Image 1 (cartoon, rainbow, N blue to C red):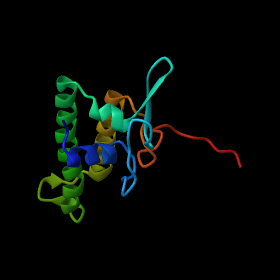
Image 2 (cartoon, rainbow, N blue to C red):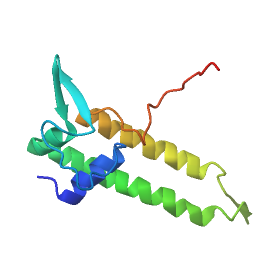
Image 3 (tube, rainbow, N blue to C red):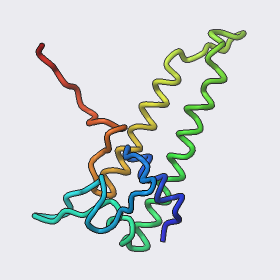
Length: 130
């Protein structure tokens, strides 16, 4: 079974807000996923009923995401350098790392079968006529 920290991290990585004092269960959660014709399940239910091999895959996703998240924040150390000797800073480093980080977050959503949450966005482009 995933630890409480891992459960909170999955929720955060796939774009859903923290629960606070709200209790998520098999029938109540902000995150629902369509898993088969006519069957919807909550994120809570999906994560609390993982088979061992599925849990191992979620743990692997988490390890990857922890590393990518740290790399994004670590890239701030290079923001003050444009060029040093023959080394040239990638001006797109932060956006490149964020794009990769968000890609892996979406891959976790896909694996779990839950749509990306509000903080992850829809992932597409919208045209608004005003």
